[in-house]
Amino acid sequence: MRKLNYLLVSVIVVLSCDRKSSWKVPEIIPEELPGFEVLINSEDAFDGYIFLRKTAAPGAQLMINNYGDVVWFHMSDTILFRPFTPYEESYVALYSDKVIHEITYMGDTLLELKYGEGGFDRLLHHEIIKDSEGAFISLTREFIPIDLSVAGGEQLDTIKTDGIIRLSKSGEKLWHWSIQDVLDPLEYSDINRQKGDWGHANALFIDEDGHYVISWRDFNSVWKINSLSGEVIWKYGLETITDEENQFYQQHGIHRNLDGDYMLFDNGEASKRKSSRALAFTGSSNSFNNTLVIELPDSLFTFKQGSVYQFAEDRYLYSSTMTKQLAITDRTGNLLWLARSNKSGFYRAYYLDKSILE
Image 1 (cartoon, rainbow, N blue to C red):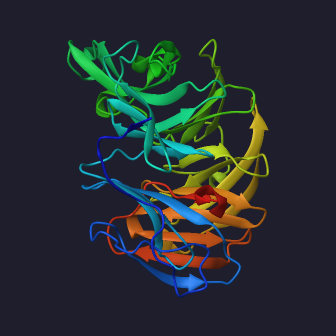
Image 2: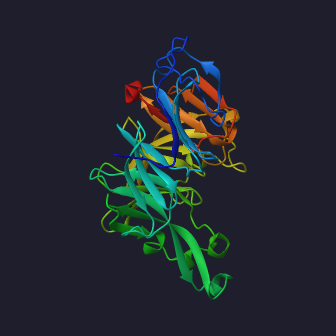
Image 3: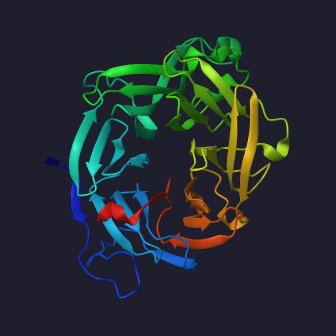
């Protein structure tokens, strides 16, 4: 296997930690890596690692334990894109909007796909995941040439928006979808003002039936898309929720949680509800039901980015990006663990079992 050429350091374990920690701490931690102040640390909060990605130059992947110690890291010599997804023996990441990498936790490159080669003909952003066949699914940047003069724009205008692409392990384009396949931009009343970033898709996952669920931040909505026909199966959000208390705003990180429900990080919105929360729901077609709401303290409000993932029956891990904090709560919202980074916040935080490094 070929070593990834942008990794400068791959540290797994060097020095034992004096604390009762579940791993060992690297002897030398580069000053470019963030430090963490643990503010709350309940004894049974978690016994694994939190997997993070630092995107500011120099970029890095890192794992921390419950004491905030960095137990593993991969350093980069440049800026990294936000999206990364962990798997059992490797993680998939966007090195940039033009490069996909799959890398083992030992630092070996399993795969590299580059824009412009094969069917890789779209710039990527915000999400990169693998399906059961090992193909890569990502959100794409779409550019729609259009006459917007009837909407107050130019006759020769462009709408920047989003789509989905499926690429094989060799870079062959297997499937592509764009929002314009299902929605006429000219039927959207505010299209001229929104043409620079129409909808802003920010999350994507493969549902149990193989179809795709996509999050649209600026629509305050999630859609389920047929992965064969591209048709919209259902929408849930601002256009379907009549009860304001149940409405979510600027959401991120849509996925299925351990309970089998859809879960997202509801960022909130400063002019409507200046607080963030976890929200889970069930549903299909036009019938939906919120099954769980976990309200976070106002001190964890993050108006953009962020994530929540359930990693045990009564444990939920959050990234409050703009406050530079990571948190763990139980189902009722009790804060069990809280840490603050001394550098930038993190787009997402994933929980990994400690066996990942054994």
